Image (cartoon, rainbow, N blue to C red):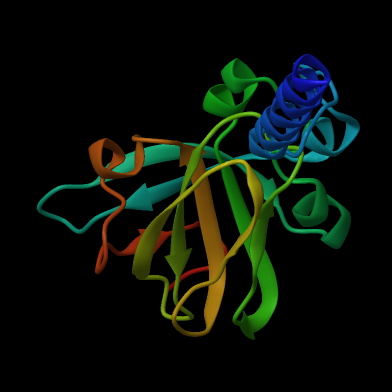
Length: 166
């Protein structure tokens, strides 16, 4: 009788451990891919970061349509995420929420104000949590995690995009 109780207790503990580990897995169980149709539909644009004392050009995929912004980096393998930084441009200033469901790599996101200045930069990790700026933005730039600072994306940095910014 004692052996049966011990065995049942061990089985219960093992099941609880497995359930806990499953909870910790990323929310995306689908395999990653090198490209998606929405990614391929995004043209490349080049923004200029910084002012006259230190300008830097940054090529980005332009996610201007709702379908492109909705897809973002979802389902892309980490190498494709790193190779395809994105500029999300909205029709008007708003306070958007970005999620990391079905995203296979951590990202840095820089939120851009209506006057095309970096408001703030956040780290996003795969999972269900939402990332939201502290105020209205007109755009956002997503790059591979750890790349925002080396690229010059920091609060107060001016961002210029030909045809869209002054």
